[in-house]
Image (cartoon, rainbow, N blue to C red; front, side):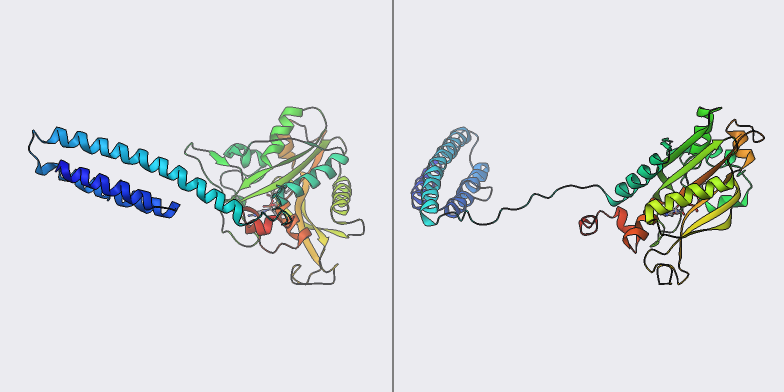
Length: 341
Ligand code: FA5
């Protein structure tokens, strides 16, 4: 069988000399040294030899494999050099072709909107207060005047952790309690931005994860007039000085009285369209005077102090501002959407 090895070796060497392209070398390798090549097939026949014949056969096969590999390397270098020369001689490079533009990164539309909102509130003297995403039931509900049995809990279903009473916050409002407990007895003007989580059906208007920006002002003699003036000023800075706003009575357990604020529809200027459902108004936030129980839970005496709070959804605001018709675009990572902002 050693003669067969030698014969294969000679044949392979002479075939190699006739291979004149990279493709021909690849196919030579496949037929000779590859896993289904001739040398490999012959190696598998070692089982037919006697125990005494096997070492000499194995040794010769290994020598031949090594020699063929070296011959292949040398031939590859020759062929590559010829191919390169042919390529250079074959055609000049067209340096007038325009280059490919490098794709620039940019801020996500949600981040842009958040920063725009931060800037307006900073201008009005509100500082950013960061609060946690993972909350206890006590902060997310109870201290905000929503006890265990309260039906208002149905408005905010959430995700629970394996630790009892530890949940993902459904709104940024628990940050009000953290801020009050930290700042008492100082007056407070803060905004509390961050992610919120709700266990609810995903639709064109609702996600299970979205940003909110909460606002809180606490001090002496703060009235509903302050709330209206401050929020109106915010809306005009955000949507244009001529923009009309209105307040509608609403219910939140942690504010009393409570309201929702609408701005005149940005798309139809109040004349009625599909986006505003032909009302001429768009809801942008919930607000109200901080409930005495919540003030007390934050450490402030409601006889001496009062305050207002509000909560808005920046993604919904961006949807209105840029005419985005589906909130699911925000987190689907589609560059065709993201590159528009
Ligand atoms: C609240 O979450 C109250 N904590 C707001 C508040 C704060 C009222 C302080 C009074 C005082 P609401 O559930 O309406 O309220 O949510 C507030 C805003 O969050 C909505 O106006 C909307 O813009 C946004 N939002 C609520 N749910 C979703 C959702 N599933 N997807 C996207 N945005 C949402």
